[in-house]
Amino acid sequence: MTVAEIARMPALTDAESDVVDGYLAVLDCLARINPGRADHTYGALRAAQALVARAADLRDALARMFERGETSVHAATLARALRLLDGSRRVARLDVPEPRREA
Image 1 (cartoon, one colour):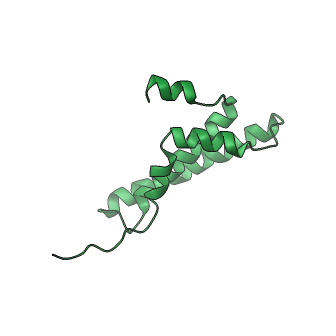
Image 2: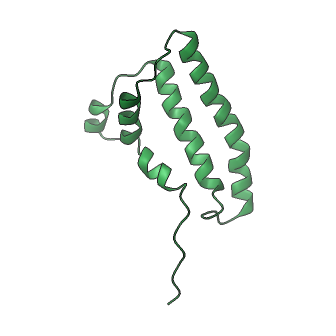
């Protein structure tokens, strides 16, 4: 991340930051599991195993937000952070790729 991108990063609470990080970690695991993109079963298996832990981390971050009285999700702010952290590219990896054309 460049200095300019860091400067544009919205201010987040610790719990919000953990939610964003946890959400991106879950996306990364799901992308590695994606059967339309995976190359090897072992890598997909390892990603599936990691997904359980990353989902628990995300759940715990959301629970911390709730326990601290952060009952509202500021979607626009969190979306801005996700965009700055390359969330769109990560989400795109969940899509089923178009079939390859044979030459």
